[in-house]
Image (cartoon, rainbow, N blue to C red):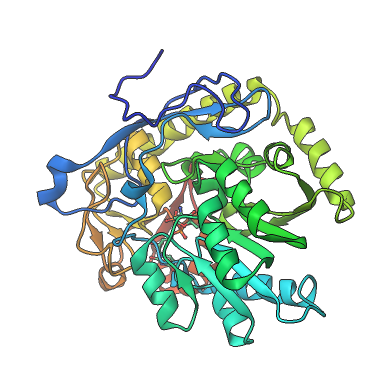
Length: 417
Ligand code: DWN
């Protein structure tokens, strides 16, 4: 047993899906709450756990062994607002339009439910068309933003009880959606039971999350942090939901969040299975996502990435260069705490989210400053922690480049661009 830190009773020794014994294949070490931005007076109470991923050899689910209690991560001060990215707003608008044009077409008075609806970035598109909808969001502050924009929102964690309550009040759902949410929920079985209880026999569950194939291919290990208890593949999603009478009927790759997959599931036998499903399952076997050796290689790649990033920043510091972080992402918490990069190597991190500004990053305590601090005096280098928003960010940061600024990236490999 390689665990070095006190457990809080939420560690597992068996797969959360199929109960097969699992063991971590690596550790990222002592890790704080990824979105736990804090002030110095809160340092003594800062919570740490051990971030260690494991692969289930039976059902193929990649999961972290220990996850802090949900209430420690999702609460009235939750720091991530989905609406901060313009590209993501457009992505969810397109997704909503696709659902309206396909699944909802011709249905009378359909009802759409979204799990983890955050600030309403997706459901506002349904609300605007007068479609009956309900968001189910456990963090009160982001739920309040959604409500203020006319998005019906219930502040709750989703499971069978919540599903029955929603059904009793609103009737069954035609569509249940979730984006970047399902991989956050340790009791996936409870969610599946909730879906079973709420979905119409001809309804669908559609969700998308960062895709394991991309994480392995790009060594984007920063997708692994407390909130992301699972990293899904078609193999693991198919297995997990088959146990609850749901077929995986379609898969659609997405460019969002550095490579995501959209999964569509339907009650067993209710819909034909798209050929894309078999094709992706075969591709995953060819990539080795079902084999333990793949995760040993991934660990070695993470170690290389860590060594190279630390070496690069140390060299730049030696040369007297100013390095600033761009985007105080949840993902950056894994990178900073795994590599041990702190305020000695990164002056501050610029972020447009007001609730993060003026605080310090979890664990490594690098100051988070408003975007204006970045533009007021451009650094020599900006470390792109929000690499998944690269296209959007590059589009608006011409002036930084023109001033001689350079970007440091670490996905898919460490370098200066
Ligand atoms: O799964 C999750 C994803 C969807 O969102 C959650 N667990 C939490 C969160 O993860 P993240 O914090 O890694 O997400 P982002 O979208 O990569 O965060 C981007 C951060 O960068 C935000 O704090 C906003 C900031 N930002 C910025 O300062 N300037 C973003 C953009 C696009 C910008 O131009």
